[in-house]
Amino acid sequence: QVQLVESGGGLVQAGGSLRLSCAASGRSFNYYAMGWFRQAPGKEREFVAAISGSGIIYYEDSVQGRFTISRDNAKNTVYLQMNSLKPEDTAVYYCAARRAAVSRRPEYDYWGQGTQVTVSS
Image (cartoon, rainbow, N blue to C red):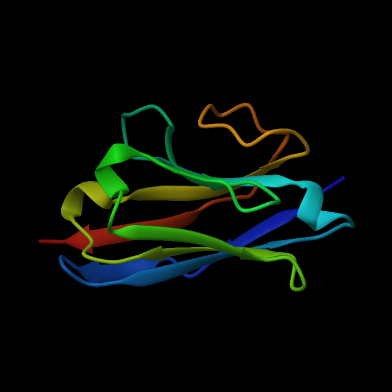
């Protein structure tokens, strides 16, 4: 069983930055692929970024070049650095984990509770 706890969300002006963190409990964190997804009001949950245990990384096209996903296996933590934020990035951001190949699909076994990111114009 893996528990995920996100932090770092908040209110920021357009063009600003935020860094989300996701702390994972349990063992063998380095074997887990980690993903970030987001869900805006009235919309479906969508993929943002993902990283495998070995460092393979995927990004959604709209965040490529603005967001950076990384992980620290010694701290059981995955990060999402978000720069040049736009109002359309406003959403609840969820961290997810799966002990399988990294994926852009929401086919993850474990999910955090989410953290709100609000970008004002």
